[in-house]
Length: 466
Image (cartoon, helix red, strand yellow):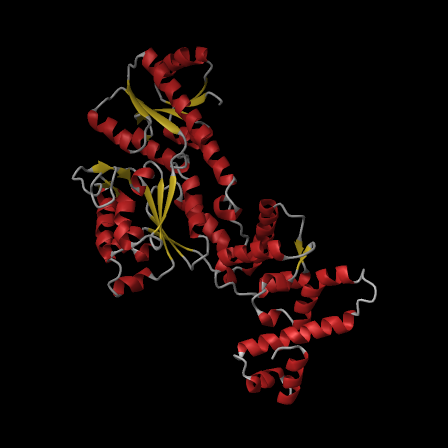
């Protein structure tokens, strides 16, 4: 890691001391004497030493601005006007440390060295976390794919929201990628070195949700054989993603509201109050305003979550993203299942773009995965994508698909009498299936088949179906 740091201080004697202490240790130091010029280049440095009192403003205000536009930059406040209040304010606003002038040279060295060690450790942890996410199947941990106007709007909102440590509500239909957006917000925030913990409120029984969220003490309830941390504790210093928040029990909503207000909670079975530094991102596929009107969701909790709302467009409203997404899922499927290269036929691509995808991106992903596995040859056809939709797969296509493998073997056999053999087997299978469907009722079967009942009876005897 490059050992570059920025000093924003108008006292030349202080700058001289810092240079004398740190440059022999290999640090590259750049200096600015006011906030305006310092903030312009602060994002280019991993560490900033910032004076509390400067000619053009207050160091605390400068710290806030640096943290908004460069959340990964560590800031050490240095001041000759040391007061308890300023130290507390600095740490509350995200300062890494606080040093009073005249500061001890050895203390300065220790604090700066520690800051760079912490940064190196954070970067290593981030690399490890990203390598784990890269190993996850398909797009669950990857980048969000989209070039439509709707998705470009989402990308811009992620950029604006991520650095600001506020609660976010992501709304959209099921399968639109709400967790992906939440991960993108986390990965572009100052919390990206912390854990991203996801909890689906709809997948956990209501009576267990509180324990899952807050954790429990040993003996708190039957089966609580040991103390267990909840998702809030697991996400400390990181982000907790609560999916399907409309499914939360009303009583639990009150406890979650208290946590959002006070940033403190207690384990089940304990009176001990625990502080937690965690960012909450909620998601829902329901209209929360309507849920509030119906008394299913607390109004005060709704406004707590709705500080910033991001609405994700359904896939049918961003059709230009369907083919890029499909190609991405196809590439990932081929890699995951170790299959030979495949591509979509023109008819398949047209069908992909024309379908409304009520299950959105999740349905598209699953369809591509299934088609990649089941399709034969290097082309994925329309019938591979919509196998359950009989209107998209003709009888001829169905029979051709079934006969291809059989014919390759039979054409090598002389005197196979293929025509009579295949016609007979198809007719027998057809009659058998229809009779089974009608429960053996020959009148209904003949009507479905469009043949005379006597003809049906004759065929049944011929194929020994009676």
